[in-house]
Image 1 (cartoon, rainbow, N blue to C red):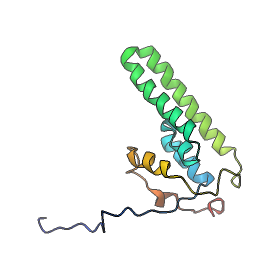
Image 2 (cartoon, rainbow, N blue to C red; image 1 turned 30 degrees about the vertical axis):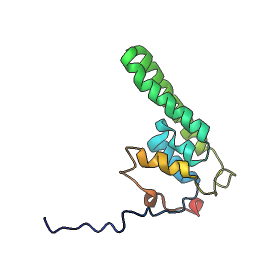
Image 3 (cartoon, rainbow, N blue to C red; image 1 turned 60 degrees about the vertical axis):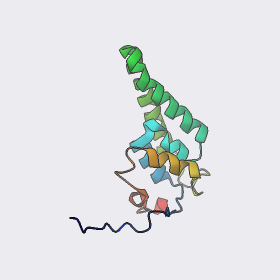
Image 4 (tube, rainbow, N blue to C red; image 1 turned 180 degrees about the vertical axis):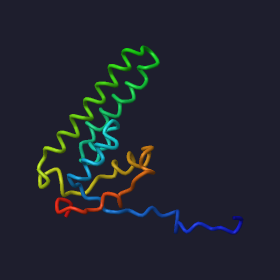
Length: 132
């Protein structure tokens, strides 16, 4: 174990992969991280992403003030998440919000997420005709 050297490559350089917005990627992100607003950052709607992230944070902090208030706000977060998933599911895969490249803010938000270790952009590679 003392002589083990992991093969990570050059850790000083961040490998940038071009990430194209697709409906299936947005849907997967909304299912996994909708409560953080990561799907909104992915789709380029940064204001909505920050609003959802702030509302989720305030909902968590409200549990320390009043349990009923925190539970009510958490129910609102769940409702917003379900509405976002349904909204993405009903959009056209060839719509104007899809097909462009993600902005840099998505990478910074995605990298600090606690679930980013469980899945990566390779998990989102196109396996269906809608991802081409």
